[in-house]
Image (cartoon, rainbow, N blue to C red; front, side, top):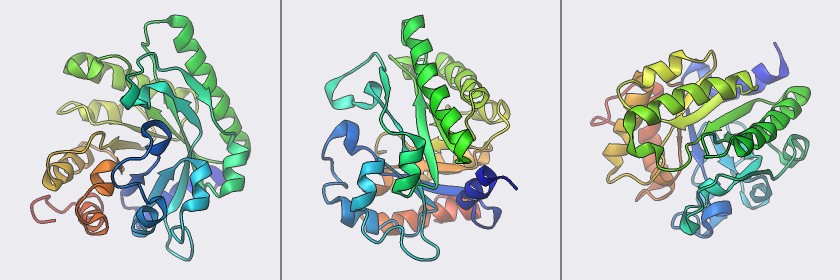
Length: 263
């Protein structure tokens, strides 16, 4: 069994699907609700299967990663302007923020890097691929699993068919560039096509805070029913009335296939 396979298996306790909580928003949003006290927010996530954060914030994670049964640690490696929503960036310029080696030294079990294509510039797209492929090469040499985050540029989400086509094709591209798993948007009734298009696990992200906790649980249920191996939720956990309680409900849906209404 390879080092990558051993580390990737940490996401799937007893072979079940995975619940990953993202708390890396501060590097593109600045201070935000649910993350103002980073250490307190982190320590409420002990029951997550994994937690995604900026590598430099690991030092502020309190006791989150201490002891048996603690979550796996996923570190984000690149910085992309498209995530900086408060400032309205649209060109998806991507830079390497940290090496895989440095992230592992900081404590990471897995790493994540985003790829955005169809930016409107072929040269720009190629540069984004170059950044992603370079990080994939580093992760391969060190035996560290790389999660590829597939994110759209411009207003693709407004057109459901075009958005689905982009997600399906770009997921295959990041797989062929070296990703070991994928974090991306749930695209609706045809999401199973996204999952079937790659031979690696696909995780559905939660994106913006949904209107209710039930809506978030329903999104998770639909994604897993379509073949996703888990979810990566951020604001829907961090900004819940009781993040730890909502996390347990989310695990009931994702791990145990419990109906959202029951959970």
